[in-house]
Image 1 (tube, rainbow, N blue to C red):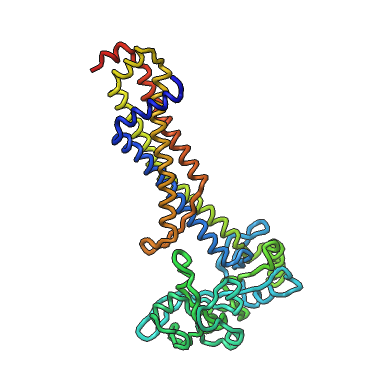
Image 2: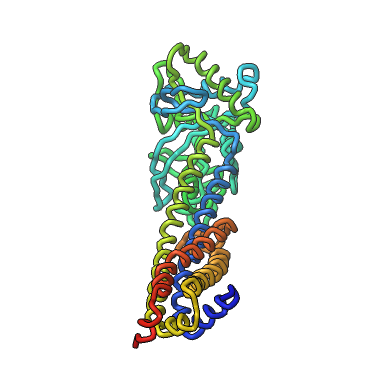
Length: 414
């Protein structure tokens, strides 16, 4: 039989049992649709998170207290209070650190905020004016912390959008007073919202002058009485100057701390955070694809089951074909073609359904979560190839069983 005859015969046999063929094909459609849509969600989540982090700055370095490890980029973040506000200011020296564009130290603590009858517990971050641009925290209304407020240790506060909504509802908080651990602060600004998901945590915080946080709220001091900080955010002049900036930061801090052995600080980059996050989200995406692939396997088992039933029902037909001169190869190819057409047809329909579903949920708010999807042609081609391979794999055994039937025994079958 020619390939065209084999294909025509396979289509004719499938057409004789349209409902059964349709239900079998549906298993593959659901499997391919699940793989494509879940992978699209995983890719979309990865791109969205990476994009949001990059918006915070790709040329950022983070200096934190703690012991260092070997290499140019230091690890092993610790909790010792070894960094001070003077350390941060020293990194702005254009002679010792020409690759550093800006520096924004921060001091973190937790406090209870009270406004009228409303209250909330949140994180308070002591900052300098540079924090607004270095960490990309623009204000939605009002003003950010100023140099004068840092110098005067002013009791002013900039609220995150979620904190402002919790304490004031839909009223304008700017100019209102809040009590922070019993002290009265004036609201001077509201930060722009960072949206939902993990980045929503940035909305649940408040900013105060770093000196105010230290002298009024934190109270931790060094033996020399310097203002300690939890970390120093450093903005390099550009991405290409990151390594040079790391060396300059290390040199300045070693000189200030009189270090001759192990560093008492760590330096990490935003790019490291992005790479670590990409690795995590890649694992998550592969995990989603693996779960969805189980439905493809189930669909393949369904194809084998239907093909075995088809062989049993068409035993006399197979006997007649062999008696009329059909070879084992012809019978084998006919049943393999049927299984492959079922899986390949289901794969094509599944790709179309997966694309439509991924586009339909892109940007939609579902159960309070906004989904972003990225349709990947590579994944679609892979899913289509896998579906065809599954049909071929699970169709071989029934086809072989049909081809091995003895024509006389097949003609006697009732």
